[in-house]
Image 1 (cartoon, each protein chain N blue to C red):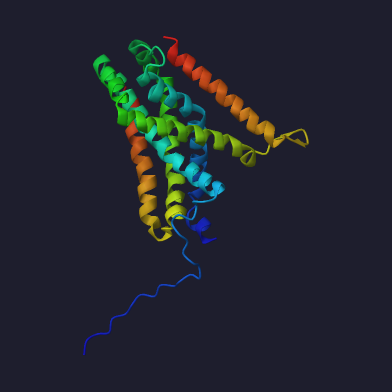
Image 2: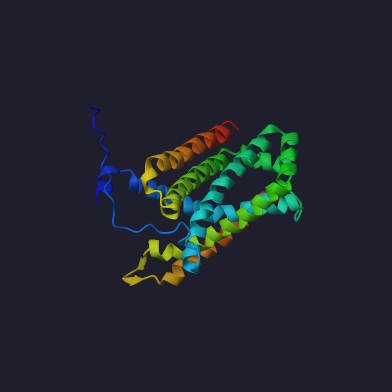
Length: 119
Length: 137
C-alpha cells in the first residue's frame, strides 16, 4: 500500500494509540468511579483537600498524569479518526479529520503540560 | 465564443455506498461502534481530570466549587455515561490483549486466556492501589 511509504509516522501513531488504550483502561475506571460518581454522590468520605494537594505536589504524580493524559488523547485521536472514517464513510475528508483529531490531541497535550507542570 | 469549462475527473469506485447506520442490527457491529465511541469519553475524562487538577491547584475554595460542579445533574449524567463507556473500553481492551501479545515460556505459547486473565488481574490491583492512595487521607 502506498500509505505505508507516504506516512512513515503511522507506526508511531499506532504505538501511541496502543499505549494510551492500556493506560486509560488500567487507570481511568477507578478514577471516574471515584471523582465522577462516588465523590459527587457522597458514597464515600471524600479525600481531604490537603491530601489531594500533597499527592499532586509530588512531581512523580504529575509526570505520570501527564503521560496518561498525552497517551489517552492520542488514543482518542486514532480511534475517533477511524470512527469518523468508517462510521460516517467520509474518507474523502481525511485531511480535515486528521487535523482535527491529531491537532486536538496535540493541543490537549500542551494544555495538560501547562496545567500539570506549573502546579 | 466562451471558453469551455472543464469538469475535474473524479474516478468512481465500484463500491456501493452503505447506509450510515450499517452497524445497527447486529450486536458485534454495535459492539464495535460502541467500543470506538468509548474513545470520546476517554478524551472527556482527560479534560475532567485537568479541571480537577486545576481546582486543587487553585485552593480550597476552587476545589469545593469543583466538587459542587461535579454534583450538577448534567455533569453527573455525563460522568455516569462516561463510566460505563470507560469500563466497556477496559473490558474490551483486555479481552483482545491476547491477540496483540503472543508470549512464550520456553517453547510453549502462553494460552490466550492466561494473558487476558493477567491483564484483568493487573487492572484490579492497579485500581485498588489507586483508590487506596487517594482515600487513605
